[in-house]
Structure formats: structure tokens, C-alpha cells
Length: 388
Length: 210
Image (cartoon, rainbow over all chains, first blue to last red; front, side, top):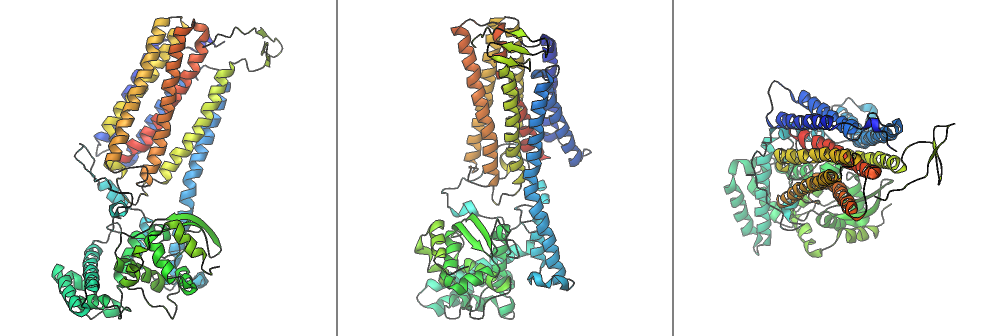
């Protein structure tokens, strides 16, 4: 049946096995003991070439494709070819939309610089500050290439990582906010959160005014200089942080919110999918800019809070596109953080807030924490709104 | 392992073979051709899985990240074990073709044992990853990694069971070099699983640390 001439000798098999073993050791050595004179590009090339050599040797000598009937080679290489094409197509599906997004970002940048009058109809009015530009540059990746390169190798097993205690434990969704390479912003962010937490604590107290003063004092105690830098923003540029915290603590004065924190939180948690300009990715992640205003006007003020807290799952229509995805809930973020992020999207992204928009206050978020909805239940509530 | 004593005659006009079941022009054992076609389709399967792994590579929002958990020395050893199992596989086939049944049984058992050792490494690795916080739901890396290497692990498991069944069958009925084609196709499958791992080892493990 089989052709005897295609069978190798035991000596040949041993030789092939030896070469395969040596190649595997060389691959291991190249990676484990990197040489400075061998750049990472060449290391990569060598690794790929070595693995192809191993691949071909096994196919030719162990699978006897060399010297066997060419029909086998024909079938197998056709399969390999289609596999490689499938591989390229899969990668391309991810790279092409991102490449288009880059050009979109360029357009927005040009417009912000006043050079893009021809593109005015595109409707992008967002200004690009350095933080957003960095986010676009890193394409929403959790770690920049430089950071990934800096990560120490786990040479021993000393590295311990805490296992999440529960599927929805806050630690599961903790996002590394240091990504956009803006070290200053981290301190600011931390200080802003401290101030916000103090404000939230004050809100729960029965005597708001006194508590607010305490909270403000506490916020200053944490890190006086940084807290001031953090909380002072356009609405209260000349006010010390104490006043901002006090305002946030007071439900009636709900107009003031922390724009800096809103943007920071949005960029850190939301922009990976919805993009830093809030335009989303057509067909994959729905836009938030302008759309949230629509939902708000259609009576969805509560729904927006519920969506952020509990997520959303199911098919929706946004601006003529159909989306069928899943958004996780973000209940692990605290009330003022969520309020600031929502306000950031509605006020600062797209065409801005509707005239009658009252910014969300921490209390608006807290009021829905006990709703206990599932993402699908949020979808049902959304279906009840008169959206197009 | 049934030995089909197929009545075959040569067709002089085409060089093909006429059997009792009809005419075949390929002159090739059906089962072997079938295995190569299956392996071609399996290439596409793994091609899309590896493509998906790379498409989502470096896009996890939360850790553990590949560099945190992947262990090159450990995986190098398991890769070596799998390569050597392929070596034993060709020895087993060689022995069967020379009607050396004891050696055929020894090497076939060796392949199954080495395959099981590889699976043991994989189970150890998976358990370690889960303890380090990398479940299949944890992040994109976890999902794509477990699907890709898990699918490969299932292939290895099927291969081990197949080889063991050949081994058992060799004790239940007479086995000779006439049955070599059945061991050969099992070997083709086994070598294919090996070359898929060669690609995974480079793409998933080695390149991560360059």
C-alpha cells in the first residue's frame, strides 16, 4: 500500500530529533538570556525562522511528506494557505477599523487647530487636550509598548497576584489609570477622589453644613497642595478645594461638578470602548456623545444612571446603527465619580448639554444603587423609552 | 486495526487501482488521504484561533498579563517532551513496518506516556494561572489563551486515547506490518498536534518576552 522508499531510517529520525531538541533549547536561550547586541527585531525574526524550521522538519521527516505522494502535499499546503489567509483576515479585521479611527482622530485634531474647516460638517467639536491625544496614541491599550517592555520577567515564582474574591468584586474591574503617561494626573486624580469621598461622607451626615466643613478640612489634610490643584477647575478656578467639596456635599447646589475628574474617569474606564471623543466604534461600541443627551431628553435621566451602575445587554439602535453587545456595570465606582463621568459625557462631548440639563449629583447615583438590576433588565427599561 | 485484505487489481490505463468497492484513481490509501484532508481543515481551525489570540493581544484592560504568568523554562520542558513524543511515534511506526511488535508496543506506549506528561504540564499551568487570578473570564488574554491552548490540549487528549486504543487492539487481534497505515494516520495526527504546539510555543510564549 504505502511506498517503502519514503520511509526514513532510524538514524535519520535520531538526527532530526536531535536537531529539533537543539533548536528548542536555542529558542529558550535566546528568550531567557537576551543579548544586548541582538535587537528585539532580530530576536523576533530568529524565533519565527527557528519555529518554521522545526515545523517544516516535522512535516517533512516525521510525517514523511517529503518523498510521499504529492497529492498529500497539495491538500495539506492548501489547508495551510487558507489557514494563513484566515489568520491575516482576522488580524486585518482588527487593524483596519483602528487605522480608520486614527485618521478620524487626525481630522479632529486638525479641526481643533482651526485647519479643518472643510470637515466642519463631521460634527466633531471636541478639543483635544494632551491627555486625550495620548489616549488616542495608545489606542486605548491598557499598557503602552514601553511599559510592557519595562515589566520585569517573572524569573522565579515570587510574583503573587490576589485572586478576585467574587466575579463582580471591585478588584476585578480595576483599571490601571497610569496608562496615558501623565504622571501628574495620578496625584490629581487621587486627591480629587479623596475630596469626593469626603464630600460623600459629609452628605450622609445629618447636619450637612457642619459635616461639609469637616469633610473639607479632611480633604485638605490628605494632601493640601495637591487637593487644591485637583479640585480647582473652571467652575471654581479661584476657590480653594474646601469650597468645591462643600458644594458637592450640598444637594441643593448640585450645579458644581468636577470636570477634571469626570474627564479622567471617563478616559480611564470608558474610552477603551466608547473612545475618548465619545464617538464609539460604529457597529461595535455605540457612541455616547450627543446620544446621552437624546436619551436624557427622552426621559432617560434615571436610565443613564442605571446603565452605568448595572450595565446593559441586548440589541439597541443608535443613530441608525445596530449594536448587540454587553456593557459591564460600574457599581464599584463611587457616586461622585459616576456623576462626574456622566456629566463629562453630556456636557463636554459632542454638541454639549441640552439647555435644561441639570448635572448629576452624587445623590442621583446613590438613589439607584439599591435597584439591583441585571444588564438585561436595564435593556428592558431602555426599550420602554421613546428612542428612535 | 482490522486488516482488510482488499482484492485489488491494477488498472493499466490510468495507473489507478480497482477494488471490490469500485475504482480509485489516486492509488493512495483512503484513510491516509482522509487524514491529510482533515489535517488541512484543522490548520484553518487553529489558524483562526491563533489569529484571534494575536488580534486581542495586549488589549486586556486588567491583569494578569501574559508576562505576569507565562513561564518559559517550564513550557520549554513541556515543548521538548512533546517533540520527543513525535520522535517515539516515528520509531513505533518504523518498528511496526518491520513487524517488530514488542518495540512497536513499547514506543506507542512511550508516545502516550509523553503525551500524558505534556497534558500534566498543561493542567499544572492552568491551575497555576487560575490561582494567580487568570480565569477564562478575567480578561481578553485569559479568554483567548485558554480557548487556544485548551483546544490544543483536547487534541492531545484525543491523540493519547487513540494511541492507547491502538495499543489495546494490538493485544486483542493479530497485528502486523499490514496494519501500519492505521498507526501511520494516528502518527500523522500526532505530529500535527506537535507542529501546532511549535507555533503556539513561539507565538504565545516566546514572542511575549522579546
